Picture (cartoon, one colour):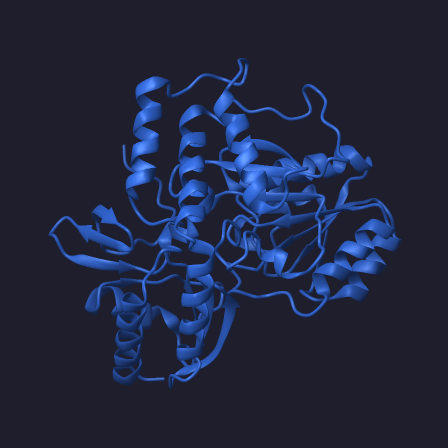
Length: 380
């Protein structure tokens, strides 16, 4: 049996990793500025991460949610304190797509409505419900197309209010920062106005922080750059587990739970909670949110002065840069000639940078020098 062909693969086979460094089977060393789709938050194989998971594995690795699992409560309390959402409740699952699916269900259950507002260019996952709210025809099968969704332009408040006025809107879903679409940051008061409109029309505001959460932007969540904002539902995954599958939904206390409303077999298992706790502990003890802001601000300031770059966007270590040429050949040269991983985007001229939050200045200097060399040697 061979593997189903789903991704165009980089011709590198990682066998070992530490921090922001990856080694391949030949012993070649690579700088990871992509973190496996923004997953590696505290650095590859961080010693505390390894210790936490190993100790948990030696005790108990798994039992289903039919029994008490104290580490879930420990995790929820720690996450509430660090995120600033201690009064919210937490549903644990396995991935960002699952988190978004469950947030949609909760919004629909709570409002009794069946239609959502989503935004063009967004990406919310690949399972059935979230495919339907993702504006990408390539991943929408006929089975997915029956869902009721209004796709609006990013920033279109007038369109949002018109859709809400028609009724039956259960919720509005928006990424803290659009990731796959090339790091598109909501401008001005857009998100706070969305929140006001959602309240006015009794719809739920869902903040998808799957890629932009867990300190990546210099705040715990990207939407926290907007003062006073409190979404009804916040979805998380990726950097939450530093590579171990874990996701979740932070749920406003006004949304009430009932048995059977949500469920999961593997979500919140002992190992995933141990991984998640280690991430929170390292983010706090090593001041990684502060490092994300410091290094990200510096890197963006340097990128803005480089020839061949037409735009730089983002916050913290969630950065998109537009080139004056196609990004594919540049990314290929970076990985094969300079051994640096970067990320692609929906935009053919855009590179995404999503390194570990522990990245050091020396590594960023190396990237800048390598990028300038590539841009100088290749044609626009």
